[in-house]
Length: 66
Image (cartoon, rainbow, N blue to C red; front, side, top):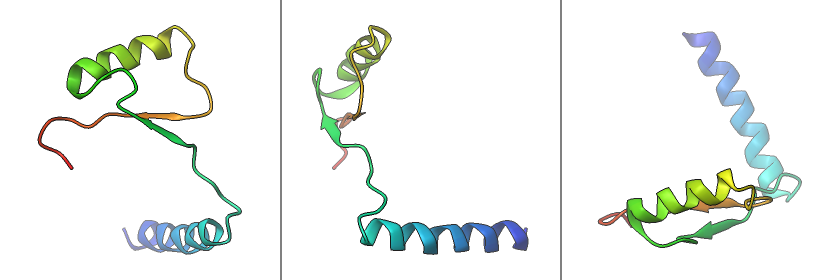
């Protein structure tokens, strides 16, 4: 769908510029906060349910990924 492609391309042009100008800033990340792998993910989901995640992203490395 060419119109969707064009719209997305325009969006990313604007987004890249805003990121470069530091006008758009992603949330900070906390990597492996509750441990590594799927076990860490499950613990991370629980702390989200408990309302202990605010203002940051939880990121987990799964074994074998870089």
